[in-house]
Image (tube, rainbow, N blue to C red; front, side, top):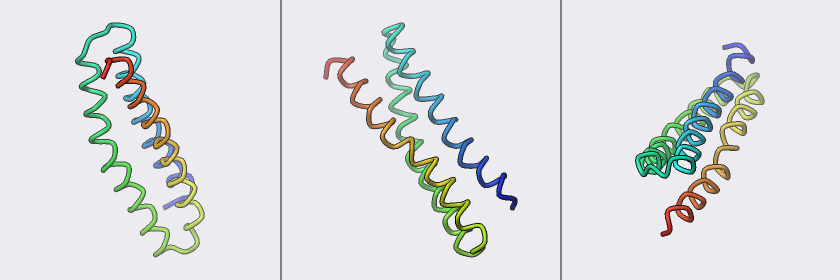
Length: 99
């Protein structure tokens, strides 16, 4: 796999779940439709195992291809940026819903 492909995997995974989280959060803020909040919780439930699986696959690939371990680590760190964002959105959603 090329280094650019590894970076693109990390960026794509990061962006997909960031965009889905933004749609759900801002959709709820703008419309007050609880379907957006439920969808956001579902995105959170699905995002955790998918992101962790992608990180694990990248790390295992990097361990078998020592030359590309650095790129795999960078892609994994890009995906990990979603963690504090997801925590912030979760608490913000809980606050906005009044729980």
